[in-house]
Image (cartoon, rainbow, N blue to C red; front, side, top):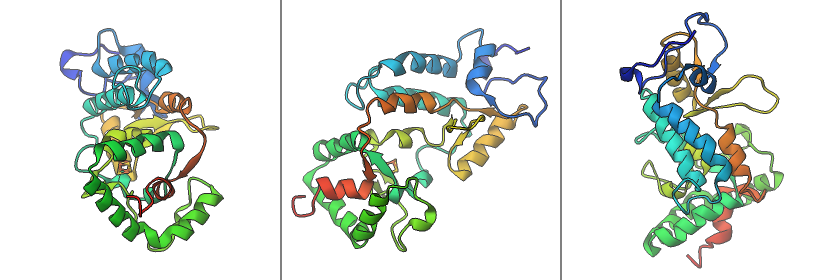
Length: 262
Ligand code: SF4
């Protein structure tokens, strides 16, 4: 039923079962690979490694090895990018940092990684420039953001964004992430994976609209649409680290980097 991978096909999505009509529901990538692979495939290998490593991770961004959730996730994300070179995600695109992430909330556990990065990897001058920019852009919305945070109805509907609030994440500087090594899991996975939401039977692309269109076209080229690997196992691993105290990013910044202390 499934063809064998040829060597020159290794960096392309694997060929798809011919019997399925093009309009059939998308196939999960995991299922395609499980039935298909009779010789090593880079993405298959990366998925297998992640499957082994994810249940054992015990830190985020500290050890940089198979015990590090960020490192394990990054390795799988890199393999997906390699397998789908048509993907728009990568250096030069910051679309997903633009909107509405000025309002996105993260758990204390992931914030701690960013906080440590700002304290240890940034120079005092970088910190003070950031805080100046941050106060200029977000300061006028402090009260409104506090109220929104207290409501905690995430994800916040687009309409609840205070008029004039910056669209971009506070850490986006000159179109680049200024906390790249410490960025949260959502930033490491968005645009590259599929997601199965609770109560749903079918997974969906976990991507911005532009990337979803591009990736869908690439994934449909050779037959029925297939879905990239699922982000769900990564999210499950992340849950083990969470403190279940989430706040909007600007509120974490105000709490831990008050302007007068820098
Ligand atoms: S933390 Fe970095 S990667 Fe994530 S939204 Fe902000 S700027 Fe973008």
